[in-house]
Structure formats: C-alpha cells, structure tokens
Image 1 (tube, helix red, strand yellow):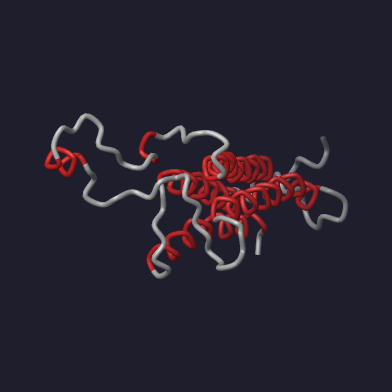
Image 2 (spheres, rainbow, N blue to C red; image 1 turned 90 degrees about the vertical axis):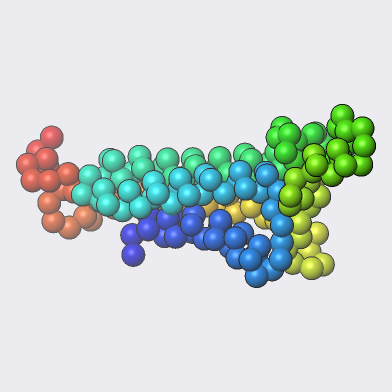
Length: 180
C-alpha cells in the first residue's frame, strides 16, 4: 500500500470517528470541534491526489506534504480549542459562547432568540474516555501533530524510494531522464 494512501485513510478516520462518537456516543460537538474537521478532509483529498500522481514523484511529494500541512492546520485549531477549554483565552467564534438573553425584554423575546437546538459551548471539554482527563480537542491536537509529522516524513522520503539508490527499473520520471 502506498504510504500516501495510508495518510489519506488516517486523515479521513479522524472526522469519521468524531461523527461516529456523535451518532452512537451521544456527544454534541461545538463550533470549534466542527472547524477541526475540515482540514482533515482537505488532507485526505490531497493525499489521494498524491496516490493518483505517483507517476510524477515531485507532484506526489508536494501533494503529500500539503496533506501534512492540512493535518497540522487541524492541530492549530485544536490548540485554540484546548486554550478555550482551559479558559486561557476566549473563543474567536461568536457561536461558541453560551446563549444569553441579549436585548430581550420579555420571556417570550428570550425564548424567540434562542436557537432551536442548543449549541455546546466551546469552553466545556468533552471527554471521550471516562477517567482519562484528556479532552477530545487535546486528543485531536496529538493526532494532528502525529499525522502531520507522518505525512511530512512520507513526503520527504518519497523521492528517495522512487529515484534513489536501489530503485529498480527506469527513473520514476520516465525514460530518458537518467542522463541528467
């Protein structure tokens, strides 16, 4: 299996696990939780493009590196999220705050201003494993760092496998390139 395909599968696994924990685990995501997922889908798409570009090693290498950067972008959002959970700073997203009455003057005004489904405030950590004091945002941070590092390692290593010593057959760039 090409390692870029493994990067794609691991990148897609993170948001899929989060969605499964919502559907079957009854967990409710906040806005920052949802923002952490987007970069993983980008990483999965870029890594799949790298697999399709295997005949062009330089392009595959760049796409795999970009997949790693996308995974690390989820880690950046996770750092913000962990800081919000720890009350180190407020959330940059207005939807992360608990609903308030605002300018409502009556109870009916307050009820009308509330969202139909209450959103989970971003400063309330969600713990996936009972007894383990590591929030899902912190787990995502660790996962994003690991996946991003792995993807960057794959990207760095890719040309050595395709063109380096010990490679069998013609150069991965095609016939006639060996003489450069």
